Structures are given as C-alpha cells and as structure tokens.
Image (cartoon, rainbow, N blue to C red; front, top):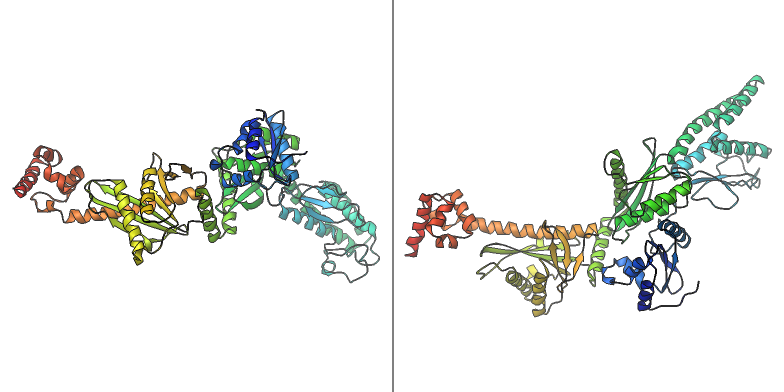
Length: 613
C-alpha cells in the first residue's frame, strides 16, 4: 500500500472526504510505520477530530498528530467488524500510541516439545505454530508453573538443565534423584521408553484423564505387591497419591476461567495499573496485573475498553462473565467478538450495586496498591508537575506556585492571602497576609491590584520575606482577576504565567482560565484537578481565617462596648445586620429597633447622637 507524504491541510481535507461509515483508520509516519490504529462508527467524524482544534487535544494526541505523515482507512460493514479488524491490526503492528500491555501475558499455557527424543514441559505466554503441543490456558503464571512442578514430582521427571540423550552418563545424578524426586534419566541404562511412558501419563493427566491413569497405577501397584516387589509397590503408591492430589488441583485450575473475571483499573499520576481477578465458584483463584505509563486519554472508559480488547482478544478459552469498572461504548460489539472467539456466550457486565460492585472495588484497590507500590513519591510529584506544565503550555514544570484570594465584609477588614505550594505541597513558612489600605468600599479588582503590587515591589526592593519568584500565579477568580495580575506584572517588568481559578455553582474548582479568556478544563485528570482544588481551598481558608481574626480584634475593642445594655449578643446582632460601626452610627432609630429591643436601640441611637453633637 503506497502513500505519499501529505501536509496538515491535505490530511484535514482527506479526513473530511471520508464516508460516514464504520471502519478502521491507520495512522503512519514518514517511515510508513504504523503509529496508531483506531476504529470508528463514522470514519469522517472520528478522523476529522484529529485535525480540528489541536488545542483541545491531550498531550499524547497532539504528539501523535504531529507525527502523522499519511493515513489509510478500511471501511467495514458494521461496528463489530471494525472492532475485530482494529484488534487484529493492533496485535500485528503494536503501534506506539495505542494502549498496549507491556507483556502480552494473558493466560499462560503449558508447552510440551513433542518432537524431541526426550520431550520437556515449560511455561508459555501464547500458542505458537512451532510443532509443540500446548495445554491450557490456565489462571496465572504462578499456578501454571505449580502444575508443571507437581507433574514433575508426581511422575519423577527431570527438572535440571541436562540435555538427553547427550548428557546421559556424563555426570553423577543430581540431588533430586537422591531425594526421590527424579528417576535419574541421566544414568546409563535408563530406557527411553520409561521416560516416554511418564510423559504419556503426564499428557493424559493434563487432558483430565485422571481416573484412567489412576486405574493403571493401581493395577501396576497390585502386580508389584503380588510379585513381592514391595519397594516398587510403595513407589507406585506414592505416585498414585501425588496424582490424586494433582487431579484435585488441576480441576480447580482448569475451572479458573469458567466463572468470572473482575477487571480493575487505577489511573495514577505517573503510572497506571490494569488488574484482572479470576474467580472460581465465588473464590479468588488468581490475579493478573500490568503496569503502564499513565494513558493521556481523557475518557477512562476508552482506556478500559482498549485494555480489555488487548487482554482477551484472540483467546479461545474465556470466562463466562467479565465485570468491568465502568461502562464502555463498544460493549455490544466487544461482547459479540469475545463470544465468537470462545464459541459460547461471554457476558460483559458493569455492576451498579450489590456484591459484584464490591468485587470491582477490590480489583480497583489492587490496581491502586500496585501503582502505589511501584511509584515513588518523587515520581508522582514530578509527573504531576510535568503534566500541569504541558496542559498550561509552560516552559518548565511549576515548582513554586503562588495563589491569591481576597476576603471582605463591607469596607471594613478587607484582607488578602498569599499561599505558596512548593513541589505540589504547601510551604506554610512562605504564606503571607495583607491588610488592604485606603479602601472606601469593597473592590476585588482594586484589592488584587494593591496586593500584587505590594508583594512584587517587596521582591524588587530585596525584602527577604518575598525573595523568591513563583513559576506560576493562580488567582482566585475569572478572566478579569487574571488580567489585573498581568497588568501589575507588566508595570513592574516581570514575566510570570498567570491563570484564574474558576469555580462551578457549588464553589468547586472546575477550570483554569487564561488572561485572554480561554478556559482549560482540569477535571479529566484527577491528580491535577485535586491539586488545583486543594490550592484554591487552602488560599480561601487562609484569607477567611485572617479576616475573622481582624474582625474579632475590631469587635473586642468596639465602641459599642461603651454603650449601656450592649453585650456580646446584641453587639454581634448589630454588626451582622449593619456590617460596620459606621453604618450603625448612621442608622435611624426605627431601623435599630428592628435589630435589637427598643430600650437598647434608644441607648445606641442616643450614644451616637451625643457624640455627633
């Protein structure tokens, strides 16, 4: 398939010319390497999105789009066909920008090299066309290796690295022979037929024919006893018991895929984890998990869908039920694909309540614990700040961030807070408070201008308390607040990135806004959303706390304390209603009587009237 290099506009034009039909698109770079494979219900709509508003894309998508030299599409008859084709192409090309498990682990198999003179068992990740025989798949690598080891011990097969017949008679038998765990096929005179018989028994055991093998051993044991070969009879008895135990274990393991798999996923700051818990008759039998670099896709459901497709795609032996931690858009075609692969119905369920939800929580918890175990605190912080820098198009990660907020009630006690975060953690020794000066009335913009001017003039004057410049300014408020900060910095000839912190109707941080009014959504990345929300809440808390301190100091020394009949409660009622002593002084008697009793109201009115005179 030949393709010529295309410009960005040509790619965009080609995307708009695609049909509104389901299919698969294949993105390639200048070396014709497939870098991404995706499916679509409508090719035109999906592919066009890549070449539309680049600013709205995630960092990963922008990086991928920058490397697209040309792309091809394959039109399918249905979304199901597109899903199957996408899965096949991803397996074949392993594209860099698709979500890929590091190790195509899936369910392990037991491999037997039947074409050798002395066949050997080993563990394999997948079935290959290499002339060997494969058994499985089984629940996990650990349990599968356990079956191989149990077979070797039960049938006294060698587990050493010696090659037969090459190494027969070269060295003395190893410790396993002397411990009775191996028949010592490295000894001269050991017939190859005996080894083949043991391998044949092992194959029949793996096929589930335990009763047949057991009856053979019982008969052989009886003959040995009749012939007074008691050592041989005891040896056969031990082998029979080992095979009995193996049969019970094999039955559990073979059924490990017959009931339910529970999928868990945790998106960490630096790493993410995909977990599959295998349940047999309600009991946890095995656990598979894989760590990966955190995907940049915005939708968690897209990540889970891609990982499930990769994990189960192309495998014939699948669980009857797969529980997912979130709903996925392609549940119907994925169910059909897995059911056809298994040759029976495979149900995909996203539980909403009950015991199955508890299983999902357990799987997610396992995923989170693996991420926590394999990610250092420094890695998480570094990755978080790198993501924030890319999201805001900063030149470097914002190691030091300063946030500002204003708090006031009327024209009295207008205060501001400056909160500092260093390496994504609060640096409380650098917190600062400001009491606004010469403010006749509340004015957030004028207050912010005064605070920032005082803060950065102190820096320019060499004040030790303000010696460090921030890498990022976060202003509590919208675009107008951000523009005030920009104006102050320009007047002082300072260059610091500025963003406003925008709240929703419930006063929760929902986005950052640039001084030119462009909003940057942060809710898609939980770690960044949590950090910005924490900074905003801390800045607001610090401002409110300072405001209350100022208010309490003023109230304690209030002129109202000099008026007979005005105690703590009536003073608080008056200040709550009138906001300030100045307003109380100017209030008419009738309005005072609406707040406190008439006797107290007349005392307050008389006191201020006398002072006016």
